[in-house]
Image 1 (cartoon, rainbow, N blue to C red):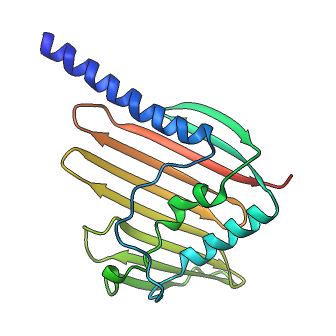
Image 2 (cartoon, one colour; image 1 turned 90 degrees about the vertical axis):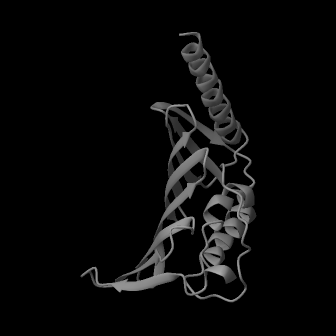
Length: 199
């Protein structure tokens, strides 16, 4: 019985630590992201997500955009308006999902999908290996402009599993939904939604 209580306390402690880390990022206008080991290649084999994100970083920074940020952790919701935003840091999790990495060349299958709507086009990328964190990327175009990028990321280790669903809307904002499972604690479900706001 004592061992069970100790395990529960440790689990609650770890959950608290993770929650504090997430909320800390929220309070400072930053979004958590995984460390990317493979640097993005200058040669582009697939859709250039990094370029689209950089355009938002430059535009938002130049025009001093603020943001509305909503954070949901296991159903508990908090919203805050942040006037001063480090856009490079804020959009880093999206930029980190770029699949143009030298080690990933030829590791994705690309399909162009017919969505049956005039002026719209979709390109779907699927990873050919379960070892690649970015498992899929869907790029939706409307009148030759990117209006949404949907990304699925999976990270597995002996102690930690993370699944992320990202929906990035250039010039508008993004949503990142995550589920983390760690050793001996319950799953942690989070959602971070950011809307770009002109002052």
